[in-house]
Image (cartoon, rainbow, N blue to C red):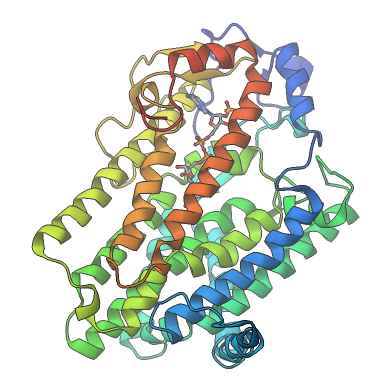
Length: 479
Ligand code: NDP
């Protein structure tokens, strides 16, 4: 376990083992404790309240089916009814595609359930780096311990897949051919686990920050830190299912092209690289995930569960689905075009990786942790020595150095550019693969608003001071 030392420079937190009894030795200031209490109670509805969340819970799966049908059956074009009289036949045609090609068939149940069971098994047994999380206010400022073995688990999964494919036991090419069937099973898991967790949490009295409205609480979640044995389910699901699927879907598309044409297009190789970078990043920096908003604040509800089981894996890689079923001549670029595409991805990745690393390591330094895990690739400028920061009355510090001196969300900007390249990879052949970047910008702006609101409440005048130093939200000089 990493050493957690008292941070003597931080006069606003006190070493207080005797009185808090939580074993981690930290308590926040009285002011910090009060704001944490407010942040841990339901104050107002988000996402448009109960009606808004019902719209999201029904509208999203419908949109995912529609986009999939357009991509696979209508040459990637956004089809619509041609007249009022055509509405019913149009809906019937879409429904028929879903009924036939996206039914929850036995293959999809076996593959998806197999993935879940295997990933849970690996998370349980593979040795990992032990990381202490941030103090959790709702647990009396106890810190939870996270076994970070995603990195090892991901590469064991890749070796397993390679063996299964080459021995012919399980052909990689089949996954992309069963995209629709797998998507439906993923959605069923998304709904089932969301409702199941809600009822289980309420039955065991572990709920926090509840509104009292059933559907809204299912959507936002009831529990903050669900665990099975050593496995933190929220962190497990965030990494081990969605990003593993997007990577293997891309590999599946590449295998299919190879079988069909005898080569893999630079576009499909690009998607293999892009999805591998994201998956590897989740594994290599897993010990930093406990400090992200999803882990310390977001509960484990439909919003997170459905999105990780079904949303991410089945709406982010439409370009792969398109390329796997269309001739390469439809999305061929010049050498310069490919160079621009790959350069944009690698530059955005570099900024994203190092921005996340700078902030997370800064937070670890604040906790007194100064030795970090070093997994591949360690990029230059991932750690800032003696950074400048704003000391808050709450006790936390806000970094104003590295990428964080230019904007308050440099990580979002870089991440969004990566999402854009996942659509650009097929050029103008279809608008549907751009769904990820369009959707993602809405998510990031909304998420940023929620996050800044929370920070303004948490840090008060210190947040204003921080905003006056780091003036821009996203792009310096622009916004
Ligand atoms: P951030 O990593 O920006 O974390 C926000 C929190 O960090 C704030 O609430 C605050 O928490 C703290 N913080 C903010 N600014 C500073 C600062 N200057 N110094 C120190 N602490 C600061 O956002 P997220 O957790 O939302 O996202 C993490 C990554 O995950 C992003 O790159 C995002 O793009 C990615 N992501 C990807 C998604 C996808 O589907 N591809 C979906 C969602 C996220 P506090 O002060 O309370 O500690």
